[in-house]
Image (cartoon, rainbow, N blue to C red; front, side, top):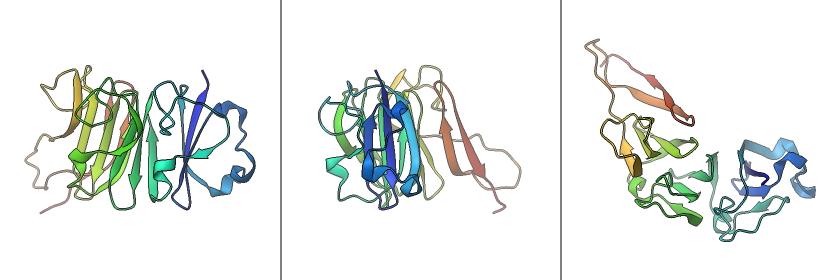
Length: 202
């Protein structure tokens, strides 16, 4: 097993490769000044982590074919899966899905990036991945999470251990004269999550 590297270029193109520990960006990809949002996961391509539709690895960076004409502004990688956020607020996912972390209402692996339909009515502005769970923050400050809920890391009581579709996280209300929390960002670990919120007087 090697590393999988995943980057978004300034042009919005997503490039992926295996064996990142070589630190070889392969010729034309060698200018680190053109690379943004570098994310690395410890895995190979046995679960379609590269999003190219096959299980073939490779150390040279290559674009994901189905995202060639899509402007991606953020990528996030978990244990064996990845998310991509487009400039129009859509979220796509691919890779390993047995914990529901892809958000497609199933636990199937996904060979290529596919839009998460459950979030299609939301304009997402930020995404994050944990080991086997995922999260999205919307322009309205809502937080959605899905995937492995075994350790209550999704922040929603009463969920099954596998939550295959996004659920909105509802926050406890306080009588502090401030409005509801407006989520700004989220970070997801192996078995926990944290989010940054802003509250203001109504």
